[in-house]
Structures are given as structure tokens and as C-alpha cells.
Amino acid sequence: MENTTVIETNGLTKRYGNGVLAVDSVEMSVRRGEVYGFLGPNGAGKTTTLRMLVGLIRPTSGMATVAGHAPGDPAGLAKIGSLVEAPGFYPYLSGRENLKVVADFAGIGHKRVPEVLDIVELTSRAGRKFGTYSTGMKQRLGVAAALLKDPELLILDEPTNGLDPQGMAEMRKLIKDIGQGNRTVLLSSHLLAEVEQICDRVGVISGGKLVTQSTVQELLGEEGVLVRAQPADRAYELLTGMFGPAAVSRQDGSIRLKTDPAGSVEINSRLVAAGIGVSELRPIERSLEEAFFQLTGEKQGS
Amino acid sequence: MIASIKAEWRKNRFRPAFLVSTGLIAGIVVLFYSAEWYQAAHPGGPREAVSILTLFPDQFVNNVMGAGFPLGAAMALVLGALIAGSEYSWGTLKTVFTQRPGRLSTLFGRVVVFQAWMGIMTLIIFAVGAGYSVVIASVQGHAISWPAAVDIAKGMGAIWLILAVNGSLGIALGALFRQSAAALGVGLIYVTVLQIIVVRFITSFNGGTYKWIADWFDGQNASALLQSFTSPAFGRSTPPAIGAEQAVLVLVAYLAFFLIASAALLRQRDVT
Image 1 (tube, rainbow over the protein chains, first blue to last red):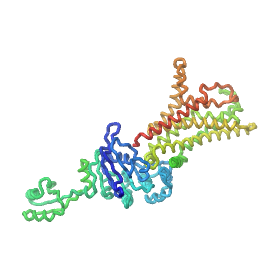
Image 2 (cartoon, each protein chain N blue to C red; image 1 turned 90 degrees about the horizontal axis):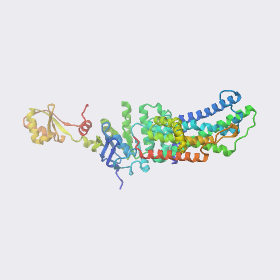
Image 3 (cartoon, chains in turn cyan, yellow; image 1 turned 90 degrees about the vertical axis):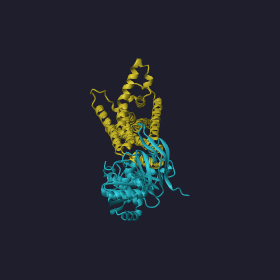
Image 4 (cartoon, rainbow over the protein chains, first blue to last red; image 1 turned 135 degrees about the horizontal axis):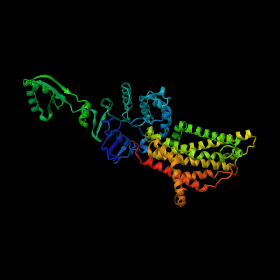
């Protein structure tokens, strides 16, 4: 049977020499063929986790299996393309020559170099020295290098960092295209919209701990119903009776119910039958941003 | 390992630091020969007279040995520190380490290509020295004769070994400090100042009782190895306190130590 898990970590922990616990017992599971969003605020431990997955950093404890091998194992690295943090290339070499160097290190031919340059739309500037590239071009070259091995697993750490809005949109489209088919993409980001647009599943890390791991839909799934009705107190009493106090809350003159929006018709009927005027009744669609802030304990707008 | 050598060669063959250093050392050999030629033609200055006989092709090996230490050594150290340290500052080490070859294989490729560059620099030093000596002999109307091939080979081997040892020190320091600037600073101070002061102190301390310790410093052995290449044409010279064979062995030991230290640092430490 084909192994459907491409990345599996068990209690992956990194404590630095100065005592800082950067990653704390992360249990992560990335399935084959999915685009997995690794979400967390700056300094949450995303990059440290990714560095451990590609063998750049050794974990203090715990273990990981990446593409069927231990992190950093040459056999595993042969199946992984990665861009961890800022792309690192030789400034005195052209983009094309840099990719040839990477291909040589990877032990593959140069046949893929023009192909990946085309994919990231860098062909026309491939002859320029890397040191003269803009941030966006550097990021593209980083993605091109990650694609060189035609990897089954692509690990991208904040690939839209430093890009202008157009560049970000293009990069997202590129990642979405790359993630089609059987290829697995692990995308780290602190941009919620990016993850919401691109990813199938999400892991949220905060303070070094993986606080949740689920599909985007599941994460957004704690939906509810918003009700505005008069008299509000009577409506609140009735709804509390229906759903229990834990599922009902008042906010900004409205009543929020933690319940399936499919039951809206029933709610409306009961309110109307009780002589309560309903001015608004709609499903609450929790944004990923709200879910994220709730999970990480960060304050919105702070 | 072949993949690492191929990649390292591709990235370093046009590296400005190597090209500039090679040009610089060739220029220094030319400058040295020019100055010596001028002095031989215009005796009477404050410096000891230079015999024109020392500038002819049969003496060129003895002449170019002076380029090996401390100048060549310092240049090799700079290049070693750059080739290792800049991988950290450019973030290229993580790019390389996330490709297929292991860390030690990557280092092996780097060392092979670096030492090949030291060989190229040695060849350039000898080629320029030989060429200039032919020019001098031709202008002076002196017959052109060459040193024995074995002497040329020994001379090239000695220069290469000195460049290799100091370059490897640069590589080890680059890996230790994870940057080129600190590696350069510390390395150059060690080679050109610190080692000399320490050796002087040890040699003079307690009437020279501990001079044997000074004889184990790489700089002392490099100097002794170069001094072993001399001939009566250069006039009186004091024989080096350290024999050429011992100097070679000590330098090879330093080379091995620096490379093992680099390997240990690269293998064990996190790439952050």
C-alpha cells in the first residue's frame, strides 16, 4: 500500500543553547498530494521546524520522517525541493549559472534549468547576475531552484515575502499550479489570506507548539448564526433555552449562536412564533483570520 | 563526491576573488623581479647588492619561493576564509546542504577545488617567474638554462603545500565564525603578527629552553621549507633550524588538522 503521509513528526522539539524553546513537541502530518499551510505569527517556530525537516538543524528531541527518510538523508533530499527563508545564491553568478550549480550539487543534469526558468517566468533575465536581481526575482529563482529536482515534496518558507501585490498574486498562482497532481507542497506563511486561498490543510503553530491541524474547512467550520431581533432580551432567553447558555452570546446588539446555519429556518420560526421580530438572521462565516487569532491567542489589530 | 567537485568548480572557476588573487600574485612576482633587476643594474643603494646571476632562469625556483610566505600564505588564507565564510553570509550553505550530497561530501568537493586553485596559483607563480627570468637572460645576453625538473617539482610542491595549509586554516576559520570577515581578521592577525610575536617570545624565553615549541608553529615550518631552496648564487645564507623533511611533515599535519576541524564543524553544527 502506498504511504500517504509525506511528512510525519513525533514530538519534534528544538531548544537552542540559550534556553529558548523554539519548537515544542510538534506532531505534524502532511499527506501526499496536498498543499499544507504552515501558519503562525513571526517567531512562532515555523522556519525552525522547516529547517529541521530539511536537515539544516538537528532536533533536540523527537523525530521526523520526510519523504520516507530521516531529515537530511541524501536519499530523502533527492525527493525534496525547498526554499527556506531568503533564497541563497552566488551573487557573482547569473541566475542560470546558479541553477546549474544547484543542479550539479543535486547530481542531476542541466536539462531542467530552462524548464524551471520558464515556469517562474525568469528566462529573459536568467543571464543577469543574481546580485542585481530584485527581491521578487530572487524569490522566483529560489522557487525555480526548489523545482529543479522535479520534487515530490516542495517546502516553501514564506515564498511571497518581499513581493509586491502583483508578484504575490503571481506567486500564489504558481504555487497553486505546482500543487496540482501528486506533488505535495508544505507552505509556511504568516499571511492568512494566502493560506486560505492556496491550501487544503493547515497547521497552526504558536509559541513553538502546533495548536491545531485540520483542513481549512474544518478550521473555519465552527460556524454559527447571527440573529438581530426585538425585543432582544426575550430573543436571548428563547435562544438560550433552545441551545443552552454555552452556545449563545451577545455582541454589539446581536446574538451569536454556535450552531449549524442549516437550522436557521427553525430558529426563525421559533422566534416569530414567540412574537419576536427578526430583523437579521444569517450564517456567521468565520474567517481564517478570526480562527487564527483565536487559536494563537494573538490580539487582532495589535 | 564527483557531483560536489563539479558544482564547486562551476561556482568557483570565475569567482572574482580567485581571479583577482591569481592576477595579484602574478603581478607581485613581476614587481619583485623588476625591483631586483633594477637593483642588480644599479648597485650602491642602502640594500645589499643583488647579483644578476640570481635572476637568470637556472635560479628562478629559488627566487619565486619568496612568494610563498607570508604573502602567498596570507592570500591563500583570505581565499579560504572567503570560500567558507561567504557561504554563510550569502545563505548559500543551506541551498547546498538541501541538495543531494551530504555535508562531508560537499566539504570534500570544496576542498578539492580550493586546493586545485592553489595549484593553479602555484603554476602561475612559477610560470611568471620563469618567463621573467627568460626575459632578463635574453636582455642580458645570458644563456638560458633551467633548474633540474625535480627541483622545479619540489619547489612547486613546497609552495602548494604552504598555500594549501594556510587556505585550509582560512576554511576552518570561516566554518568556525560562520562568516568571512571575522575569519579574515583573526586569520591574518595570526599569520602575519600573532604567530611571529609568540614565536619570538618562546624562542627568547628562559634562554631559548622552549625553542622546540616554536619549531612546531606552521609559519616557522613554512619559512624553513622555503629557506631550504637556496643556492650559492645568493651568497651567504644561514641554514634553516628546521629541516625540510620535518617542515613538510609538520605542514601536512596542520593541513590534516585544519580540514578535520572544518569537517567536524560543518557536520555537527546547525545551519541557522
